[in-house]
Image 1 (cartoon, helix red, strand yellow):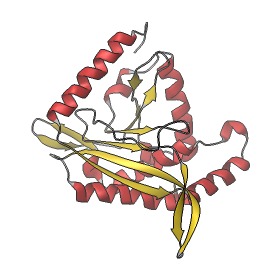
Image 2: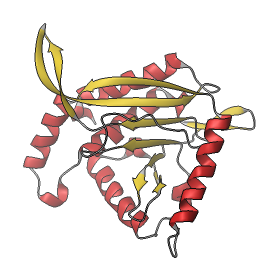
Image 3: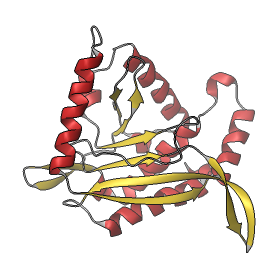
Length: 226
């Protein structure tokens, strides 16, 4: 991805891939709301105890929780090729990055499940910087076994993604919003994040998809284990 950036060419490439996806892939969609209070409290404590250069963004927790969940539910981490499912050899998460000139890329964070949170934060910073400078490696664009998109603090409350073929799933996170939540029989305000899954019905079904979302939820309730 080196050289001059052509927004029209980028948009055409996205259009071609997404049109193929919607034409060929029988998508199914699942959503869940996750209580982000434990993760937010842990993140605040971590950042308070570290220098600015070592602080973490919420995206690192979302990314690691997804990576751990994919280890539990590997049927969503791979490819649909030649009429069948091929499991990914590792968890290489494609992280969706919006480019300043327009367009979108989703380069791989390799072995995301094995990286520590600081390592994931460093990988995210590096990918964003190189993606926007046109310095991604070809392997980073072809290696993802699944895509994750996070809309961040300024995004919508939820997102339903379109699968990037030949992958079989995409996970989406909205921005964290304060919502009424029932805790021990009482309604209290809680930070809540909406997570969605779009998956290929040829490779999995809603039962497995629900297991993945439940595993992401469990991971975020125990952020100290990430």
